[in-house]
Amino acid sequence: MTLDAQPVLFIFPGQGSQYPGMGKDLFDAFSCVRDVYAEASDVLGYDIAALSFDDPKDQIHLTRFTQPALLTHSIACLNIFQEQLSSPIIPRAAAGHSLGEYSALVASGALDFASALQLVNERGRLMGELGEGEMEALPLEFQAAKHIAEQHYCAVAACNLPDQTVVGGRAADLDSLIEQFGIDFPGKRSARLKTEGAFHTFYMIETAMQFRSTLATAPFQSPAVSVLSNASGTFHTKDPDAIRAALFIQLFSPVLWNANLNHAVENGCQTIIEFGGGIGKGQSPAEKKPNLAGIVKKTFRRHDHPPQYSGVINIDTLEKSIALCTT
Image 1 (cartoon, rainbow, N blue to C red):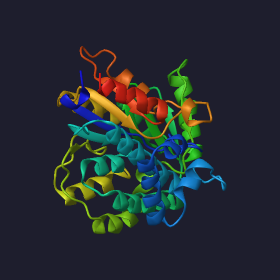
Image 2 (image 1 turned 180 degrees about the vertical axis):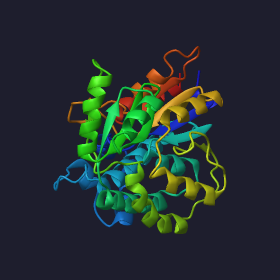
Image 3 (image 1 turned 90 degrees about the horizontal axis):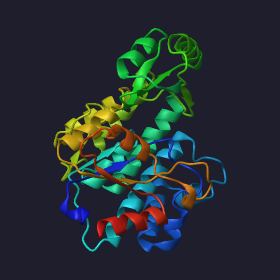
Image 4 (image 1 turned 90 degrees about the vertical axis):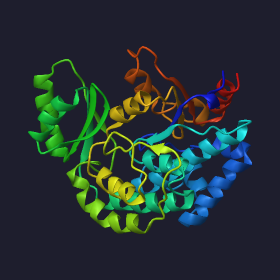
């Protein structure tokens, strides 16, 4: 059974899925991947391949560099996947987690790659320079996380699963929150995330205000493929100005990722394919696994007909995904 006859959702990861060496195996093997990195370097004004593969100045985890590096890797993975198929897949929809929403907009035709790079380059710069605070992943549902967060001057930043919510705030406020969390929820464990700010909370309002003018001049078009909005949890409208506004709001509003995934499946998506990034303790691309696979599987583990999942992040996963699409 081939996937190009099925309703497919393309998804793209956000920050946290970057690592030194990301994309090197695909770059060495495929000319179309090298073309993506060459275009990105021309747009950005620095060698994104050297930063992504060698990271000589230890910059890949800085937000201003993380965002263009991940966007480049995601689109490179998408392009080589489509090139290897006998007939490219036209997905039913596309979605991305936080930064990944920009990759989804490229995949949909709403943005060209160069314009998306310019946007995330500025977005990453502003988030890194103006960012304040940190983030904590709590094993709580949204309302419980919101209740405890707001008692400590913090806010919900992302809803990844029904029982996994990320909150953000100043370090001291998060420390106070976690102290109460340990009392209220003994036996549960939270995790501090490595970020340069409390992204997707009120700490990003100044970033959003400065980013608005950049969004206003970006050449958005009506997407040819439906794109899910992190801010609403449902599909963007086709209106470019409305997409700009939603991306503005996304900066200081929770990423409704669990709602995004469920909305896509409720609207007929039966297969999910992830592009870009990678997580895992190993150092090389071959040792990494797709970032969002666990969230996807947990989201639909009690679903009567869970969507089929595949990821494209390195040569091994590319080959497996191509085999899945052609058998």
